[in-house]
Image (tube, rainbow, N blue to C red):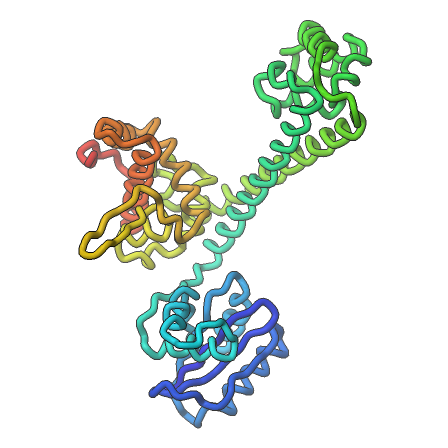
Length: 395
């Protein structure tokens, strides 16, 4: 038996063969992440392998850079083992020379496959991959939108520090319409009350009008905000508000696509307390095939919601801090779902309150809810049956 290990890089990969006894079969091959490079790998495999010799292929799941080569080799009919880079790192630590060198690392990957003690990274089916990509892109846009909002608040704190008292939300429709037109107190003072009232009436659908216009003008006239660079600040606010509105429209578009994809999958995930379309899409996309997790503890660890442990001599204890390993997307979605479940679902609310009565802090109690939620997710997805409320599960 021969083993081909492939070390994955952004622009170039490295491949090398080893035999059953771990000895190298010649030198490794460096090839580009392109069709020409992939064809070069096929020729390398043909030249290095004895005729009719069985072999296995292993590669590291480094970022997203492995996907193109993986797809190419799968289409050619090869069976591949994709491993987490952490596993090859563990083997690397046993070598005296511990620096990362691609020509050495490909043989280490082959060794991991040869030893056979590894857990594979599974590529989910296409429908789940679509959902994962949409959900991750949505999170990226949400983060961008939140950053734009922070920038708006930073500018307003300088030029119009009293502004946050005027509207229930700085980023409500009325406030955004106002800020796009009048970003600084000086601009507000210069506009007549009637024009301002007309803008507010239209943006608020009649809820705000002349009284609100007078309130804003009075506050602007007495503002202690900066008057330096007022035009630049007003321009910055307008551009940021437009960016927020544009990004929010994009998120709405993604939500429609996510909803369509969830209907196609017809998953029971949305029957679980606290899980909505947005969080459900992330959870399904990140988990992929629930069969990867033989028990719920492994799913909890994958989400990074397992507590960290420490050891001193024969004593082993646990910190309340989360390990935060695994998928940050899954962890974030489960945490948000746990917040909602602890507030509105009778089982999870009772469980949260029980932890609080035991003296647990809010964050610790919520972490326990998140772990319980993952156990529920594991059970529901494994059985492929809708969630049912069971008050006897408050443990």
